[in-house]
Length: 238
Image (cartoon, rainbow, N blue to C red; front, side, top):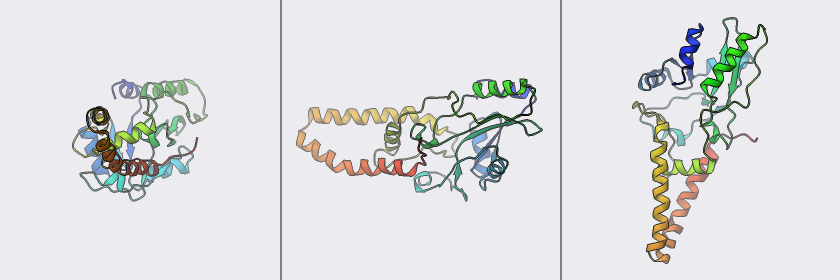
């Protein structure tokens, strides 16, 4: 986190924790591999998430872990209760809510895979809440400025196909090898561009009939892959 928010929060007497539905072993490995400046806590049985829900702090959506998210991982995935969508919560020692946000999976944020409030915005909201000499809880932040602009869902689906070499979609899951899976996006985007250029070049340089036959043979594979992305990602109506 390069924004300086972590240092600022600690200077103000606070602390940051990352909670994940992964088992603790993988959470610890990711913390070390990505050199995260805060502790990551595994919550595969969602005890922390359930507590937040019971106390009315956050109601994180929960998705099922299917074959799409597990078949290409280098480690055994263990999500006995599924995986929860992202959320952010800031509390005082007295359990006053200073800030809260929860992801609602839509087509616009790729089913919850992208779109997070920026660290600067969260810290600013926390500071404002602390400055208010009040016991009231912060309302849910529903329209925060995001840390990055999510790609259109159709493009996101094509990128997953490109990640799987256009034979089947492959999720950007952590492999336990120290690599941030999101850093594969530029390579995958380049692969998608090359793939499209190759089809255009084929129509321009090769007999049209041959290329059309190849395209007809490939279309069922592409349609099946893209459709699986649309049906796998949890999406709520907006």
